[in-house]
Length: 353
Image (cartoon, rainbow, N blue to C red; front, side):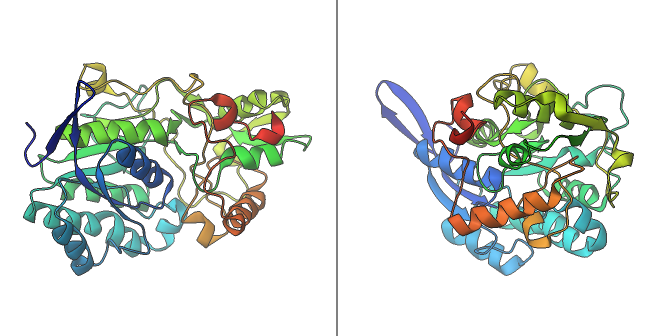
């Protein structure tokens, strides 16, 4: 039996239940982690940014030692990639030093740490997909701070690197693209490749790793790869719009140019999962895993950027910021439609079906 975990027998099956503390619980991934772990029967301590400042050692120690969780999933981070270039000290404080405080507090109560990391630890110049044993070489302040965070956890901890994270919660790329769908032309970059990763699938994999207390580094993405241009074409096609209106551009053509361009080819190969450690998430072409979310827009509104980043859009950055504000004002937490197993609900709001 995994140390300190409760085993409950019900309906002829055995489930491992945990007390699990989740940082970044208000973010895209954090909300799906809280939901999935709660539905699995775990005792969830959800700490969003307002409740827990990862850079505050005393606050982190108090949160973890007072609750004595079986596992801590550190999904909290400062992910405004371009803003990290302008304030690297803040990036290091939250993304690296904050992990030190999490690891230190977890060590005191024998809690297993799952550290969520990123493809930005690579430079994106490798000809093929990156495996877990490839050397890192971050080229941005954000990537360097996240690499620093990886170095702060114990060898027995779990590091989960993921990429192009898309979620049903918070600001949403799909809604923005659909609101721009009546424009005669849209432009998205076609020289950045990756694997869009749906947070509901990622949350399930993270919980499995936490339950098993598996050590080491794991790349966890939905299978297959595309470009932002191809991703947006899929969104338009799924909603009955004309995908031909999307024009491919290069990263160099983005206006304004980005202070911290992402790695161009950061495709992550899920090698240990492929070797049978855990089931791999489905391909992005699978209707269960397509289309919802937004990651990587380095736009103009600092408050919005700390909650959503949409990569590679050349038009409509202001529209995304407007969507963020409008969603907040309406109290919306997800794309319309509650059936997260159905493409029609997860990709296309009801007004477009």
